[in-house]
Structures are given as structure tokens and as C-alpha cells.
Length: 33
Length: 600
Image 1 (cartoon, rainbow over the protein chains, first blue to last red):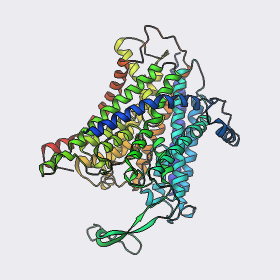
Image 2 (cartoon, rainbow over the protein chains, first blue to last red):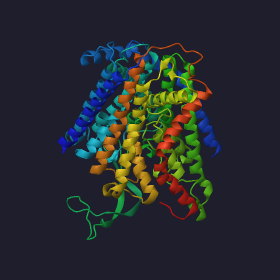
Image 3 (tube, each protein chain N blue to C red):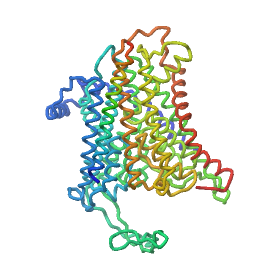
Image 4 (cartoon, chains in turn purple, orange):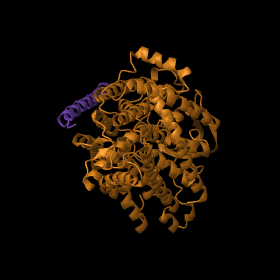
């Protein structure tokens, strides 16, 4: 089970890194200043 | 609601007001990579050594993406390390009780909980964790998660204050300086004070004492392998046991309690948390713990004002927070003082109020104030059982967390959460009066509102979603100790507490199961990082904008109107979002209590 809990943890943080990338892309799209 | 309570409330408020400015001024120095403090002769060499070992250039600033990635990588690594320590606890030193390794599910839940400044505990500290686990795996997170929260708040404030800037500061420098110059010295002073009040601080094995009056108790019968024996119907078989001795926990409590409150973490050394006489020995230690919880969040509002060169704005945010705090504590105190009318109908003197689940040393006022303070901030400490509060009294702590814990809030998290509401309030005000929304010279545009909305709505979506799933599934309901609306409140409170990174428990819910360890652990992670990422994106967006001079057409962000607008925005968003859920829990329970004989 240790591997399962570790994978869940890593996947969550990878999703967060993806969220950073998504917002960075959105920020460029909507840049109006 | 007696005179003693009013005097304490006024004293608490005045002390908080008096300490806001000095703490804020100190924060200005600490959160400047080149700032000087009176601790420099002692701590500057340590700070330099940390940078050298870690290979960090504190003056090399990061953009919002770099800052966010640093936060995420740091959190991932420290969470995995905590998981490892808890799993290997049985083989590690400083374990005089010989506790075995913590199970995988509980280790995941605990590691996630402490990494995110939540400190939700599906275990009893004194019966599960070794001294090493408490001090290294858990307390280190109490420092790091608090410092990370303050760092992110500082990054957002810099984003507001800077003009056409690409960077927000250096996360590693902010983290190091906050731990070294702010949290460690404050904790040292507070821990020594707590020891003076009788709080213990040792590494002794637990003490076994003979009880003065032996008694018999019904406990679950266990077989030779330690498993509970069940009868043919699946019910636990009970047996009578004569209790002649008790185990008194020992350990380094004062040092843990100091950061537990100053870092708004809340994880108790003992299962009874701040209602345990070792963990909260006197009314004065109780008072100082409450003050310590609000100390840094209040100081951060002054830091905001100083950094954006509008001290009035900082004080207006402080006033909005204080007004919400005052409303909450008065409702909670009033409800607990009024008590339970069903008990009064049975002939119990109603003047005592609702004392169920409260420490007699603290009474109704100090229990109500403690519950309000800890849930305004993201501090999971409790000195009374929230589960035993009256429905309306228990609603206040829960609703405080629903509001986003922006009422002073967690260290850093409270300020950046409130600033998201400031952006939203200015946007709404701009729509109402037909002006372009503008915050301290920065135009609020579509992307800013999108990330502000994401910061508010995504955690709420998961909170209500997890609650709905748990309330509809066998694993969710089976863990409850109470039925009806009170049982629903227990589920709602658990996910509210974890998404809000508060960590206090309504109790009455046995959370150490596979599904609760998984969902509550994920809830703590979502509540922390799905808020931090859009907040840093907002900071980056604001930093890049040109600051235009404030003119007659600018929306004023100080004064009574702004304060009331901010309070209104926070309350309306919270009320509209959570009214249906709290109607099914504490509100219906309240009406059943006063209009029928049904109690839950």
C-alpha cells in the first residue's frame, strides 16, 4: 500500500504543476494590459 | 454572558489592537530579503549557512510560476519525508513507549494534513506518535507550513505594491527568514511562558499512577490477536474491566504548543488538545494561546498597509476582520449561555448555560472565544468539544471556516484569502457604480476575476462534493456516532475543516478508515494548493500591471464604506454557498431542539 499512497501524493502534485501551467497559459491569453 | 466574559473580550481586543503595529513593522523587516532585525548578530550567520548549503541566492527573485513551483516541490518532498518517518516510527529513536509504525492510510492523511497547515488528526497523539514523530515529522511542518503561508501572503502583497514587475520575491528566502527571525524566536518566548504556567516539557516515559477510586468499565472484548470480538449479529462484544491504574502522558508539549498556536496549526500533542491540563494548564495560558493565534495574522494587515503605502487600507482590512470576529464570538457565546431548553424543561438550572463538553476551568465564555478564534484562524486547536455545542453555537465555528478563514485567518492564508475577497468586492462595487474596477491603482481585469473565482469556488466544489458523497455512502455514515442532522453536521464539519485547512474536529466521527483517510487527506491538499496556485497567479498578474495614480474616480479602499462592503461580500458569498448545507445540519437541529423533544 505504501506505493499506492506515494503515487496518489505524487499525482496530486503533478496535477498542481499542471494547474500552474494552465493558469500561466490563460494569463497570456487574457493579457490586456 | 457575564461581566467576566465582557472584561476578557475587551482586554483581548485591546491587546490585539496594540500588538498589530509592532508585529507588522517587524514583518516588514523579516519579509525583506535584505531587511535588518535586532536578531541579525545571532541569526544572520545561520541564515547565510542555510543559503550556502541549499545553494540558494536569496536576492534572485522568482516570477509567480517559479514561486508556485518552489512551494509545490518543497511541499511534495517534505510530505513524503513525513510519510516515511511515520511509517518507520517503530525503528526510530525517541520512542520510549515503543509505538509501532503508523499505518499507511493514517500516515498519508497525517502527512497531507500537517503539510497543508491543517493538522486534522485521525489519531490520539499520546497513544500513536513517538516523540521523534511529534518533533520532527509534525512540528517541522508546523513551522514550514506556517512560513510558507506567510511567504505566499507576502508575494501577493508585493504583487499589489509593485509597478510593472515580473517577480514576486524568492520563496526560499521568505521561508528561511520567516522561520528563523519570526517563528523560532516567538516560539521560544511563548514556550518558556507556557512552562512557567505548568506546561510540561520533557522526554520521560509515560507515568503509571494508581487511581484514587478504582472503578469498572465496559470495554470491547479482544481476542489473542488484539482484534475486537464480534457476536453473531456483528456487534462488538463488551466485557467489564476493573480500572485501577491510569497512564499519564509526558513529552515535549510546551515547544509543540507554542508553534501550534503561533503557526495557527492546531495539532494537539494529546487527543484532548487544549482541554488537557498539561496542554493548557491555566486560564492565563488559555488567554495567551488565543492571543498568539491572532498575533501574526493581525500583524500581516499592518504589513499590507505599509507595503502598499496605504496604512488606512491595512486598518480597514483589520476592521473588517475584527467586525466578523466580534459577530461570531457574540453569537457563539450567546447560544452557549442560553443553553439547551430541553434540559431546562427537565429541571436543570438554565443559568449555567450549556456546559456539556466544556472544561470547567474555562467555562462557557472561554470555550466560546477559543472556538471562535481557532476557526476564524485556521488553527485546529480545541479546548472544548464543538460536537457538544448547541446547534447555533456549533454553527459559528463551522460557518467561520465556510467564510474561508479570512477573519484574521491562518498565518498568511488569512490575508491572501481576504485579499481575494477584496478583489471580488472591488469588482462587484465597480459593476454596481459603473466604474472600471481598480485596486490601489491596479486595474482589475478579466483574468484577475477568473483566478479569484477559481480560488474561491474550486475548494468549495470539493468541500460540498466530498460531503455529499460521504453522506450517501455506507463508509461515510458508518463512521458516525450520531444520527439525523447532527450526524450530517459531523460529516460537513469534517470536510469543512480539512478543505479550510483548519483541522479542528466536531468529534463524533471515527475518521481512521481507508475512505476517510483518503478523502480527508485529499481535501486538505485541495484546500491548500488549489487556493495557493490561483492566488500566486493573481499576484503575478497584479505585479505586471502599471500602477496608475489614485484619482477622484478611483474606488476608495479604506474607510467605513469599504469595510462594510468587504464584510458584506465575505458573508454573502459564504451564506449563499453554504446555506443549503447548514440548513440540513445545525439549523434544522436547532428548530427540532426548541420545537420538539428530539435531540441528536
